[in-house]
Image 1 (cartoon, rainbow, N blue to C red):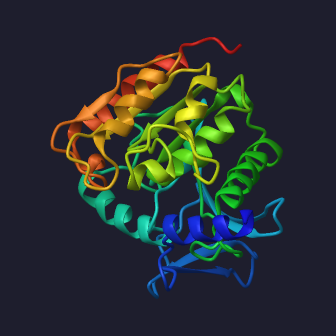
Image 2: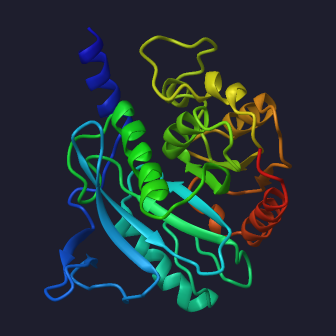
Length: 288
């Protein structure tokens, strides 16, 4: 019964782009991995590394690390549904030419003049993009754990210097990991869900077959939490973000984007401004 329910939940919850929007290739001389998007390789940059990471579920996920030499904090980003690294990399490379940003992110961009203290690693879930396996709730937990392990083992990042960022479906793995990191610097929830079932039905109690039960996990996080949500979100109702914020132990001033929808919050000027304020505030918090 559990296997059948998990399979049903996966079909309802996960929509990886098909076919994937990018390929991964290795340089013939250096062996370094690069992304090729829609037949074109993105501009090479010395501060971007592409890698494949093993998970404890037996899958291999694609991850990308955007380094900032002046960074003191690192943001680990979990993207939303119906997207992969290639799709988002392409969109925001285009935006960067208009916004004059010099550090590209998965779903948003940081300029050194805006948020100079951030580094930005990204990863694809199992079954998304060129990551192997099939997507499931438990696999996404293994995926973010693999990305976090890479930050610690390969880049020497400390728990207290990491901000977790989860957008939409990505709020699930981000919040799950946050419950296991008591010294985490902070958590950002962008258009988050209360739970998978609550996106579809107005249930008031948690069911055993539900997935990403963020509503039950958010009270377990003792670190600063920023919630961002659009008031006109057509996919995940605005009430999800409001309720999660009310349940936070360490609330930071939320950002309710008037007329913001599910996939356009980054286009509002207050998005980067508010995020800058949050990062600057948590940077000043002494590590536990």
